[in-house]
Image (cartoon, rainbow, N blue to C red; front, side, top):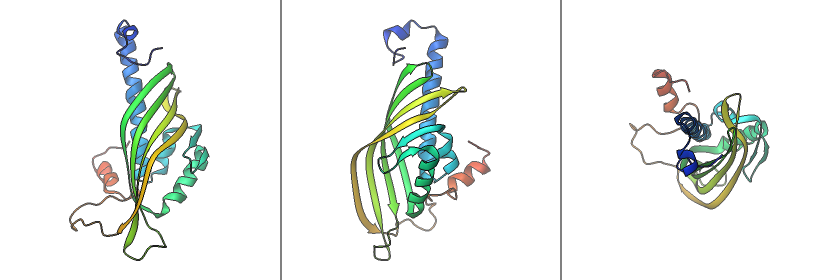
Amino acid sequence: MSNSITESADRDQVPGEVLRRLADEAEIRAVLMAYARGADRCDIELLRSVYHPDAYDDHGFFAGGVEEFLEWFRVRHQTIIHSVHFLGNISIEFVTGSVALAETYVRSSQRSLRPDLDEGFVEDHQALARLIDRFERRDGAWRIAHRLVIFETSEHRVVPADNGFPAAVTVALHSMDDASYAFRREHRVTS
């Protein structure tokens, strides 16, 4: 199976096959976006939903199964007060009709409490990385079967804890208490 819907072999496919490939790509992208939202809101159930139950995750700092990864994540993120994962380029290559490899560029920005810092200061951490994922479609759903995180750069700096926003501004929370969850409930968006 070819890797791009624009390759000449794909131009000869019947429209249904091209639409299936586009739908598969859209579902894989949605899984990647759900991972970013789950990580940034510390939503363990959403994070769990992007992996197959027997998946393997190698974040460098942690390598192992999904349930162990989620426990590592939960503990690690207890001191993180703000988190943003911004996904950039996403390339998807289909190995078969039910296996795909994805490479996703990501910029993460996290703000952490550190007990060794003076009161009123926090640590900002910026990192550039790539998520290398093996996706598998099982029971009709694409999920991550294996993930490798490749880090590019990392920068840490100590900054004042005051975020500088006026009181009327809605500020993000690194939890499911974030205003986006209430907004989604209010507007009846459940997934």
